[in-house]
Length: 448
Image (cartoon, rainbow, N blue to C red; front, side, top):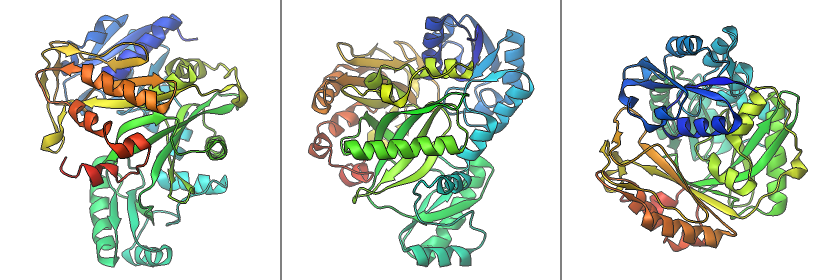
């Protein structure tokens, strides 16, 4: 096991990693930008290093600065968390070339999983069902039109190197397809420095189901069940739950085996997530793999009792999993809400600023992962998430009731948050019944 690591991230995930390391006896070095100099978790780390100004490009995304901090701090490995450089194959390769461990998959696996076109190619080779579409990046409008007419409209255009809803457009006819390709390429180039896009059939009103994967460097891979991430706004996840309220035992087994099959095909190790769309006929399709820990990993921890960050550390240190698929058991139901400093009534406009009173809920079955506190200044430079509220109960109805109670208890004064919006979601009859798809927010909360 490592004795000292550097955390190349910020916010609640930095705190989450520090906690896991403390319980494993690992020293931590927390990096921070000038905007995060008063972050509370810096007091809990064994050492801290300032890596630059507030701008991410000059701090959390600056590979030379992070490597320099790691060398100065004399660490054995780097944990990238999620976001920032967590799925950057070049960062993982630089770490390897500098003899610094990377707590995540290999650079080769990141490259295979990170590019959606290559990932689909690998999925097909592994005989994992993919959505019909182009076999590779679209190079000409004529090619796109031919494919779209073959598979049928509507189609969706996606950035090959994309994520988070950027570089994505839905087209219902030839004209919107041509316009959408141009717009998606421009957006993808700006966001990812890679303007390549591909198209596939647009699955209308699906469920978004993802399977948590763990793999060691000895060839052992298991899944820890699924998370239902269907509730989204503009392709950004809002609510995640485990297990999904719509998967049968047989379908769960089949999809889980498909997820493991894909991970094995690309030689994956450490924690990752294989994502699927599930249509209204119960057919599922591979869409991508996230080669990192996910924001929503706590719901899996709550229903399995497995600490995913500790597992990441163990696996990166070369240890074997120590358990097989038949050892994984799901207990109860867990739900997570992302608490953002945003104003839902103003188009979810970010609401940075100083928090007055910060009073998180508690009680049996309630977990809050947050770096915020009373008096904390939410900076305008980064993602607006200030915490995650996770609840667990014996069944889904119990989890919903605990979540409603917890949202009523949660107090964040001084700025706007998404808490009131979640209260509306958890009171909605369709959500309570589990009868929803990815269009739920647009259908029932279109004014938000």
